[in-house]
Image 1: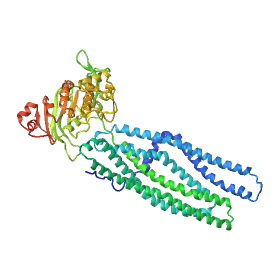
Image 2 (image 1 turned 90 degrees about the vertical axis):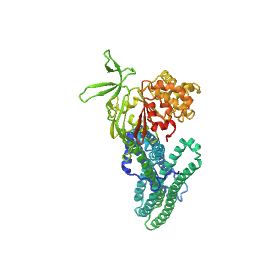
Image 3 (image 1 turned 120 degrees about the vertical axis):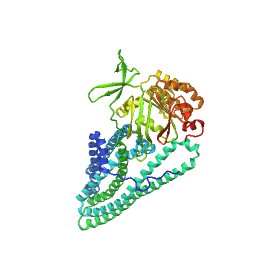
Image 4 (image 1 turned 135 degrees about the vertical axis):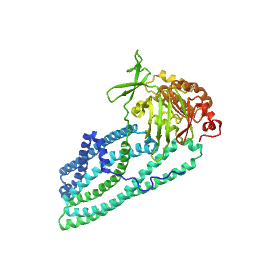
Length: 629
């Protein structure tokens, strides 16, 4: 089905442009010296161009007109004046070159800091944020929005200020040259402002809409690239093309309207400039005859007239780009301002050991014995050995307040037990494992880990004690060894290799071009789904966690491969508390307890034999009388 066009209509406007601009400037604060220098150079460059035009007056009045009729005029003074004029323009050129170089440095440095803040803050956001925002939407902020911000910082910002200085300088010089002719300029300026106001309003709308449509097209393309195999498997090419064609057409229409406005502003301003020039020349000629206005003053004034409308047009165009860039910056800051994942836990995970009396104590060295360090209000500290005892007491949870996903869930998993969850899709199996990790916090009930309320445990320490193998395996760009080591960054090469052997992943790794040093790219597209899953299992094995969560961990492995790794999985699960979510019931027969979930409730519990004797839902599932969906 075509995706709904959520962004159709009025593009998002900048809610608070001054606040957003002020925030951008705060990022540029580390470049105060450069910014001051840039402003000085902008002033010099703009005023040099203005001053250079003024030289026409003395050149014409003091040299060119007096030379008329002379056979051998003395050109030394004229040449000197030309050299001074050229030097002024040269100073302007050098100033423009230098400030552009400095502006690029400031722009790239500012964007570096903004991207850094975006990415670093993104690591602090809760899982809920990523569950409610598409990858394309987030990527658009790193690409499309930062591109518009870069253009603003490196070009629009400086050009806008330069144009403003030029307009002010030219206007002042016009008043100095001829207040009477300046009245014509004021009249023309009113007309220009009215036209630009109308065109700017239209342009701002369409340029904003264009940015929105670019974001949608980029998001759709990224989504299609990621899901290209699914598209081909389900012969969705025609629908994918139709969806893209609609989005691309919307972008084309928005871009056409935006560029139409942008492209006609300059011709309109150009024609107005020519008309203004002609009128000024005519009125100036009359003033020359009636009031004695000298030819040099008229020539300089006419040149200023030609250069007056252009910077105003530039300011209008740059203003539109500034608004678009500020809208993009606002979306960037919206990500940075998202509430980070809160953590009020104070119980931490520490290396531990036992003294001669069997009492546990904290130690600096790694002993593979872990303990929860629990400080109390009276200043005392207790240590509880990490064993993997997990208990749910009357847990109620919903992803939003209107709909409950889990209803009064109570269960326990003793250290070393294997607990399995079965049930149809949406029954709440994965939600339970998300709550153990504290990806989401529960509004009602309690979850205890080794007798400690998990809300008291720091999230990083809690998650460090858990190992997860998900159905959807994600591999990072890097070698096979680096991907396995992702489970524990301080693991040695030997420990990584042992983990791979435990998961029976070493068999296929040895046949890769460079073994453990084979580079994995594009999320491991050069590996089979089963091989990727084996690497994920090895990654969990090297982490050596006391609690293991397997969410459809063997779903992508064929039955032959599954039989090969089952012994390795048994070794991996030995002595650990294991939570297993599986559709393949053969993998959970040896579980200590099996929980059958339906509509967020545990409707049956017991081991494999007990549940078969009950002849309930599990019996129906196992005998094929009822299928999971």
